[in-house]
Image 1: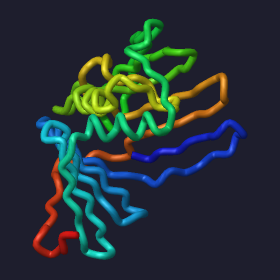
Image 2 (image 1 turned 90 degrees about the vertical axis):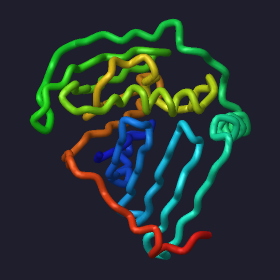
Image 3 (image 1 turned 180 degrees about the horizontal axis):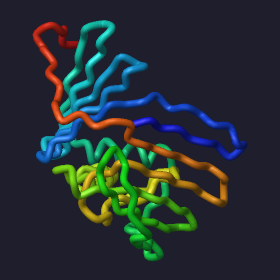
Image 4 (image 1 turned 45 degrees about the vertical axis):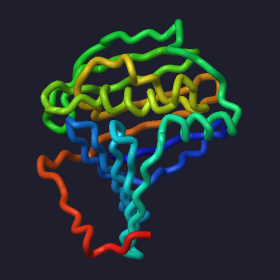
Length: 193
């Protein structure tokens, strides 16, 4: 995915590109090439492995991710919410991305608007993973213009554009290519921290 964000002053910030591997089991790997690091996340087992390729090290973390995330959010004085009562998801069209037919949805909530492109042609349900991440926040809301993905239709997210008219902040995330093969990491060549 290529990701960028525009802050309230209109300055565009390039966010490091990332490669993601997603398994139907809920295990997700995020590779941030520019930072030469990778995170492998298993939401069901509440565990994560962080790999630093430059140092050839890794750290395994097993914890109550929901409680840890709640504590972080509370320390940042995030507001309590449940699913927003004004959240609205509507299908607004279709478009082909990377050779896949995508349904385009418009999501409006709390005065913010997002559009997402979701395909059913890839055997992965992004809403399950996004819902898992959202659930890990324990009903708290991030100070972000990202949409609540818990109630999205199933499928693979290939593009998302979000904006907050009140702050003029924007964010986009676009899949640039899809590889059908996974990746293999030989953990014996890394030192555990």
